[in-house]
Length: 93
Image (tube, rainbow, N blue to C red; front, side, top):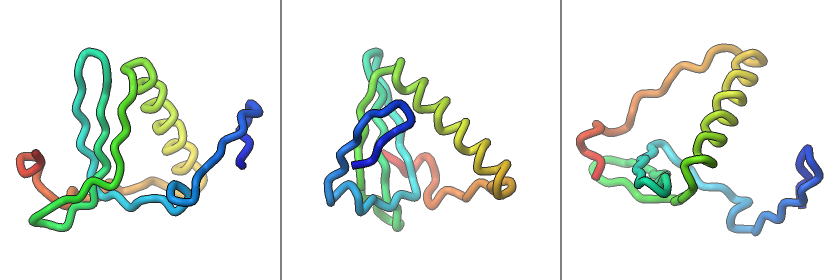
């Protein structure tokens, strides 16, 4: 188990520990939730590798945490160049 900064023990199963590759993200939302579909796109198709469903309030915290970590990464290793999308936006269902 991993221990976070605030002492929360996190149990990670073997399947989750392997991780999943993604090169495309589809984000949709309703009033109550955000849905993030992580995809592996190899045109002409994409396969969902994970789906995360979360509340709008928690989504805002996720976005902030991601932005803070990208900033820390760039301070340590240099600016990250944005990768081109493997597909056009209109090709995503």
